Length: 585
Ligand code: ZN
Ligand code: ZN
Image (cartoon, rainbow, N blue to C red):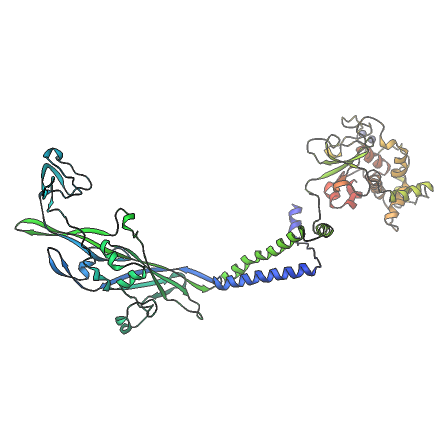
């Protein structure tokens, strides 16, 4: 919990390495300039500063024109909009008939089937009574009858006579290319509450106009022939079989007051498959009939109609300046500048620089730090020449934890030499300790301990001097295998326990220190032990741990007045190696 609170009061910032190089500097600014230019071009080109909305639209159409045709068997007929528009109109589309086959006065009865729907026959045996399939015009009666000349086909019960005419060529209503259509298109951009329609002119101008891509691009009245030729088709050819033409209206609107622009743009293209030989059912056609009753007998006129369907499709979007969009765009482009760093780092890392320069940059740039979460402890055994780095275990005693790595002991002899010099001169006069604590500080190693826990034979102890401890990382002996304790070494008493040496060591660090308490000497002794056995810097920044026998020996020499010791405090010790003094109290 304190860690969380501590994090709230902290701010982390990045540490940067400044390389003073004209080459790299100019390269950086050139690259940044190129990126900035790219961003600006994209901003203006794609209008990234705008908020967009899609069009909602409605379309209505009105076709106009009449045509006079000569239909075989019927004669001259004048077609107006009702005739050629077909029986129904789809949504956003209109139909114009271009070719027709009319079969007049059909009645219910029996008549010969028409090839190719019905195959030819010789006798009645070739015809199956009641047979029909999806190509039949009626139900077979079982008779084989004369059809035309010497040809015989099966007789069917159907609307007779059956439609049997070729598609007229050229198309009967080929002159429908002169028809005109008025396309009314109302659009709306809901996000901007903007309404507009494609009729941009007044009534007089509208009446006389015909759309032309170049001279009259905003006129909503179109000549059908122009639409088809704009779609790169020939009206006469298309009229034979029919087809589908798409009329696309595109609204690309800029609703900013300065650049306001919202006009439709028309384009045309054929939507169905054009090549007859590539599609099984080419073009567009359908049949319908008109019924009448003559002398109580129902008759119908069957009309097969070929024609062109025009589908009107409306696309569009409108854009308006939005500060939020601009901020989002700028924000999204900032990451492009990282490319400069990536590129320059790559340049430094690769061949462009000498090995020494590269090494120099890398050393300055990367600082290797140990993962402090993983608490490493450093252990030194008197019967082993190496320092052990151990990971703190939750299950095993420190004595039994297997080492992560072994390191050669690197004693910093400079400070030790000073101390040894002091030792050689003989112990100086001990300073009187104030607060009357001198009474409490026993000089002799034989002095009974104040609150020494019951000495017992610990399973992990090899020297026989260690004390029991509940904490697993305090269960550490001075030895790896059975033998003499380090505390029995003469140097231990001289270097660690001798009061005048400890005072000298404390004054060495702080020449004007005032010695009041035994605690200072105890801590000094711990530090002294660490300096002696571990050196000034432990490998991998691990926390040095003093064996139990040594801790209790030091405590016996410089006990706490209240007999309380807080033990090894790892979190504090880890904050700084200098805090080693506080590591054990
Ligand atoms: Zn021991
Ligand atoms: Zn020991």
